[in-house]
Image (cartoon, rainbow, N blue to C red; front, side, top):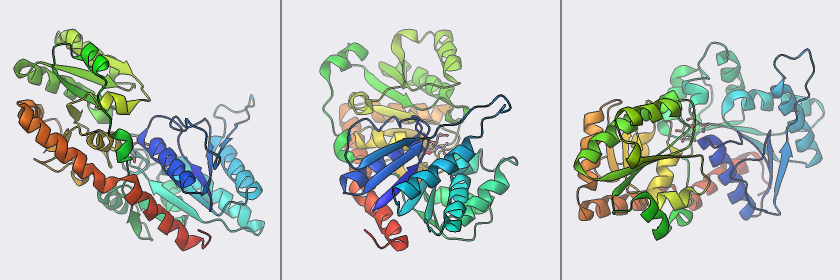
Length: 375
Ligand code: GMT
C-alpha cells in the first residue's frame, strides 16, 4: 500500500508516534511518504520504502503570515498524484485535517479519490482546537475525514464533548517498540549521573505550562530529603528557565541536570528509576509509555488518558493535579527499598507490552484496509 503521512516533525509525541508508525509500516513492506516542513526527528535511518517530501512555503513581502496550510495542501496534491498514493493519514488536526480536506477536494475534481484518516493527539482538541479562532475549521475538517482515530478513550470522550462529531471516533492507542526500550544500563553513564548509587528520577517533556515542570522540582525536593536521589530533566521549552530558577532557590543544583533535547531516550531511560509526569492534562503520555517499556515506574496525575496506561499501585501511582505531597509520598514508597522498586519496574515493563508496536500497528493496517483493498 502507498501511504502519505503528515505530521509535525519535532520532538512532540504526535510527530514521534507518526514517524514510528511510518517506519513500522515501511518495515512491513508498505511505501510510506512523509509530507512535512522538516525531516522528522525520529526519521533517522535509511529505508528503501520511506520517502520524505518537504513542504516549501514561498515567501513574499505581502505575507506577514506565510500561508503554510496552502503550501501543505498543494504538496499533498502533488505527492498523492505523482506517487499514486492510496491513502492519506494526518496526525494532529491543526492544520493537517483541513489541509487534507482541501487536497482531497482538489483531487476529487481531477477524478482521483483519496481517503483521509485523521488521528487526534490531544492539544489539537483540548487546548488549541477548542479555541474560537480554530474551532469551526477543526470540527468541520474532522467530520469530513473518512475515519477519525483518537489515541485514548479519554481523548475520544473529550472530542465528542467539545465538538459535534457525526462519525464514530475509533480508539487506537499510542504504541511503543518494547524491544527497543529493553536496554542494559550503561554503567559509566549511570556513574556520572549518580556516583554514589543514588536513585534517578526523570522527567521528559516539551516544558510547556500544561506539564507543570515546577511540580517535578517540588516532588524531587521532598523525595531527596528522605532518599538520596538525582533528577534528570530531558527536553526544552518555555517553562525550563522557571524550573531552573526554582532549583537554584531550593539549593538543588548539585542533584539535578537539565540535559536538553535528546534522541537516545532508550539509553537515558535505562538508568532511570522513576518517571515523573505531573501534567495538568495528557491525552495519552507517550513519553510515560516509553519509560514504562524501559521498566521505569510512573508517578503521574490522574488526568486524561494517563489512567489508561498507568495502573495505580502497580505500574506506579496516580494523584490529583498539584498534589505534591501525595506524589512525593508515592515516589518515596516506590523508591524506598530495592525489592519494592524491582516489583514496580517489572510491572511497568510487563504492562507496557499491551501497547507494543506489534499489537497496535496492525490496528492501523486494518483501518486502512477498510478504505483501500490493496494491502
Ligand atoms: O502538546 C503536547 O504535549 C504535544 C502533543 C504532540 O503533538 O506531541 O502531545 C500530545 O500527543 C501525544 C501523542 O499522542 C500524547 O502522548 C500527549 O499526551 C499529548 N499531549 C497532551 O495531551 C497535552
